[in-house]
Structure formats: structure tokens, C-alpha cells
Length: 114
Image (cartoon, rainbow, N blue to C red):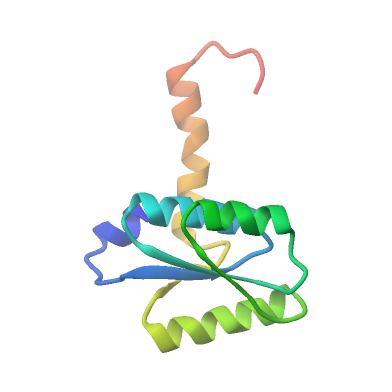
């Protein structure tokens, strides 16, 4: 979300598809950045993960029988609403997630195990 805000775009929010973990992180980050989050999950998705995404401020939309159908709906919603589509393996997500190792080892350089 930090990258999205700094990129100078006018995104009002994000839309993504998930089975839960990616959606939770996106919902939390969007809320922290002051952006709306629409998270598309397949029907029958984990009730607990859906509740967690809602608790982080996302609008959870149940659509389709599986992840692929949910992902297709997320693309459609992004095109229809102008929200930024965040695929699970977006380059900026990978970059952000991978930076935790550097941050951890910088903060605590003498770790014996992670």
C-alpha cells in the first residue's frame, strides 16, 4: 500500500482475490493507508478468515466455486470500479515481504534460529 500511495496514482482502494491470508494482509494494509479494500473469496471460504478480513475493514465478496472464479471476478470489479487490482504475487508485495528478513537480522544480528 505504501508503494501504491507513493506511486502518485489516484487509487481510492484495492481489489484482490484470496482464500484468506493474502486478503487479511491486504485488508489491514489498505485500512492503515486509508484505502478501501474489496476482497473476493470463493463460496465456502473459511468463515474465520472471512471474519478476519472484515475485522480489518474489507468488504468481503463471495463469488464463484473456486479461487480462479473469484480471481476473474476481482479483475472485473477492478475494471468496473477503478480500484487497483492486487494479485497475490505482485512484485511490490514480494519486495515488501522479503524485506522482513533484512529488518529482522538488522535489528537482532546475533539470532541463533528463525
